[in-house]
Length: 392
Image 1 (cartoon, rainbow, N blue to C red):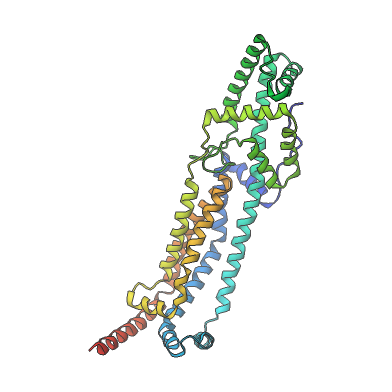
Image 2: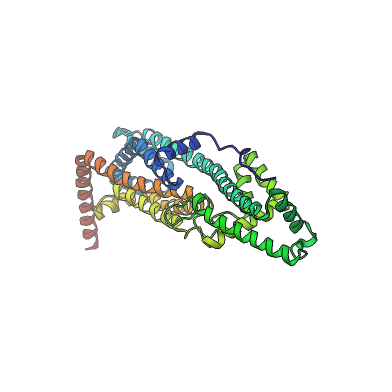
């Protein structure tokens, strides 16, 4: 009658295999495994990050150089967007700049980023279901060993447990004799104490997070049964679904699950974390955008004003800059902490690599940037003299 994990296979696939491979030599909890994996992945993909920065800087310089002429086109053609775009393409062509070439690099990066994000999200969702079941199975075996020892045999315990949970309206315990109640209470207390001690061995903690397979926030470190069912169902793994259904369809198993979950929660409280991963992910997402903006922004305010005037649609990008951090927060808040660790680590590495590649790219384009700055400064001074002359 005892539940067993033997029929539940560990998830396979690219991410599961990669995570387990890294875990085999990193050791410790899976939180550190995911952190190391993402660092390695970002380092491998760093050449692509450099290409993106190089392409973005080149685009920014072309736009800055052509800003005065674009401003004149907008003034000349007004709301005729088609004519402005035609003339803009002609300017780009004269500069030897291929808009589509830079878009291809960014498109490749976007597709790759989305593929990694969503496949890893799915992979960790399946792995979290397996790990949560694995943790429960270990606790359940400990619980069963304790209560069966208290009753002298598996059969004796199961007979008493069936009586306690099967009586109408769950009053089986009330129908026990005083002696049976005392024995039942003693057996349950011993089993819960054993479960509490075992939890320290099976919990997969990481810094402030008590169990990385549950959200970093207000949630029991060992999922309540309805949450365990939800995890199994969203994984779409039939073995995991069958496992939790086996518990749901047996009153003894379900009562044992609640007893075990209650013992863990009594020891750990109902806070698995403090929402720090979501907060950090938002801050890092904003920081990463600031780094990108600084890399492509002209330090001379007058020169930048000309660029902004020539590219008014750039100001509307604030919506995307707001949307991305919000989306990151939603993903982190609605999935396990393991995925939150991925999001935070990825953001940290992206920011650090972005700072480094910006230094390299700025060094490569230093002479070109100085030429553009000089041209923009002359244009800014010309406009200022024109304005002052008109004011007189």
